[in-house]
Image 1: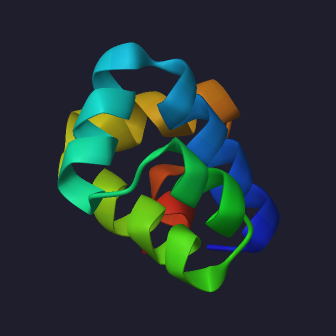
Image 2: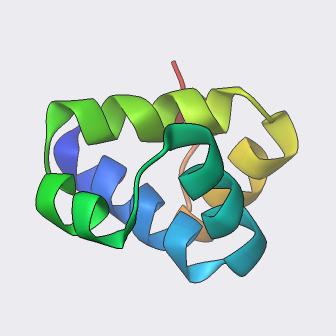
Length: 74
């Protein structure tokens, strides 16, 4: 996933409270870590892994971003 798309997906996850809480719980990240690493390759990987783990969320975030799901979680 490219950096811009990863940031957009991360923003969509963070904007959705249930997704945000699950993302934080599964990754162990907190707000400060997300802000510090938002544009990093490891954050893009965490976003892709998170979305790959639950197809309904993947499809929903892809729909919000107007992209095909496979672009978010190859």
